[in-house]
Image (cartoon, rainbow, N blue to C red; front, side, top):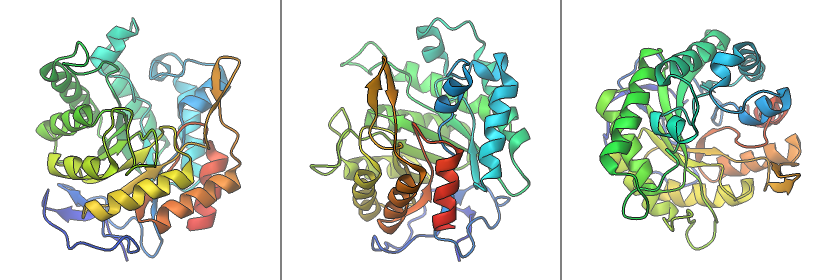
Length: 317
């Protein structure tokens, strides 16, 4: 039986072989209670941007303010699938990313709204993760962004999401391990809530590699050291079976639980936009492969829908 319980951050867990599913360590929280029970894995929701695009509204967190009813409806559809965790629609809503895209939106207002909408959709047994993503600029010396600036932006967003009463944070779709470590460190500076850290991989070959050349093993080790509660992979350009290979590498490198949130296959460009055509059944089979490889938490990223998540839960639940 797997239970989400209160443990000391960075406490060393007994190392488990990749075929076993670890107990999920959640620092600083005792109110998550029992989430998984006898099931194989805990379930997260699927893509928000894909669903917003299909609804014809802004694909960013700006929709939390402009089209709150649409965001709420999408959250509710995922909640009705029976997921354990809903992610807030706040992935790119840090101050630097907002300014870079010239969005006229208040960072505090948009993140609080995102937390509140997910909370309204969640059932009594479901939990909300504050979603944080990349700033969108490379850190020095490869880009213009100083690490202290990035740290401040991540810390600010994390603080607002915590104020919005999320149950934990998820830092995802990170292409650069340095930025991911910076984000985890910043979030850990402001909260003892669970922090899940997820990396986008460009390939499953050669030890699993990000666009910046970071290996899956190095990512798992560095994020564990930085204070993450769980580590793993999402998005990127690997399909679900490729992500299973990355999961196996990460599972062997860390005592922490591993998360997998694959896309609905590999995207193809159709009329200037990425399109994903993997069926819910095939996606569910890929998610199952990730669980066999050692993932303790599974969900969906780009191209996935409530139908994909429901198929996954029906197969694995």
